[in-house]
Length: 318
Image (tube, rainbow, N blue to C red; front, side, top):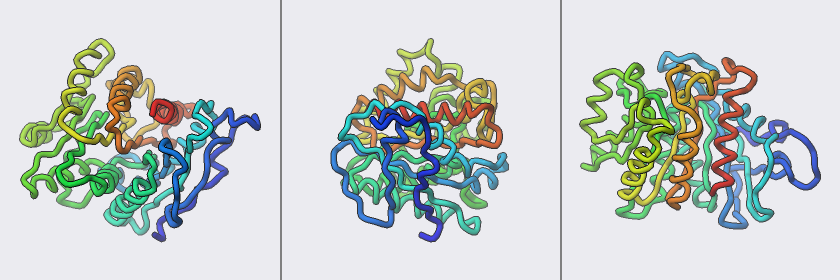
C-alpha cells in the first residue's frame, strides 16, 4: 500500500510522568505491513483514514484529512487508566492517492481484516465518512456463515445517497444496502440523530424501503434516554456483532464546530455516552470509528477534544 504512512511518535505528546499516567506514554507504534501479535484480549488498534476526498465529492468543506492526527494529539494528553497489560497501538494512516477513493476504501477493508486477525479492536480515526464502507467490509469478512453485523450510526445524515457518480462521504450505507439487496438480505442499520432539514425526502423513502431503524434528532436526547436505550436493545438483539460509527457533524456545533458540515441543531455528548455504554456492555462491539473532524474550522481544538474524549471513554469501557 503506497498510500500508507507509518505512525509518528510526534503526534503523541503531553506531560511526562515516567509512570504511564498519560496515554502518550502508554501508546505503542506498529505497522499494518508487519505481523502483530496481541499480548492480551484488550488490545486497541488505532488506524487513521487521512482523506477528505469523499467530502470534496459531496460538495462539503475539505479539511478532514487532517482529522486523525488532530485526534491523536488530544488523546495523547489525556490520563491513562488502562491496566498495565492492556495495549493501545497506533498503526498509522491510510491516505488517498491520486483522488482514488475507491482504492482507499478497499485498502481500509484489508487493513481492518488484518487488525481483527491480529486479535485487536479496530478504532478508525477520520477522515470523511466514506471510510464506513471500507470499515464495514473489513469487519464483515470476520463473520462466520449466518452471523449478522449491525451498524449503529450516530449522525445527522443517513448517508444513503446514490453513488451514481462515484463514492463519496454521503454514500457508504447506500453501498452496503445495495450489496445486501443483491444477496436478498436486509441491511441491519440504525441511525441516531437524523435531521429532517439535512436529509431529502427520497433518502427517507429509501430508508423506509430498506427498513432502516432511525431516531430523529428531536427524539435523540437525554430526556428520551429510556426510549433510546429500548430501541438500541431491540436492534442489538437481532444481530451478532455491532459496528459503531460516530459522525461528529451529528453533534450540535456548540460541541463540535470543527466538522465538514456544522449545524447548531445537533445532539449533545451525554446521550451518545449513555448509548455507547449500552453498546459496549452488550459485548457485541466489533469495530468503531469517529469521523468528519475538520481541524481547519475547529475552535480551541474543541471538536478534536470531543473526538478524543469519546475514544478515551470507549477504550476504558471495553
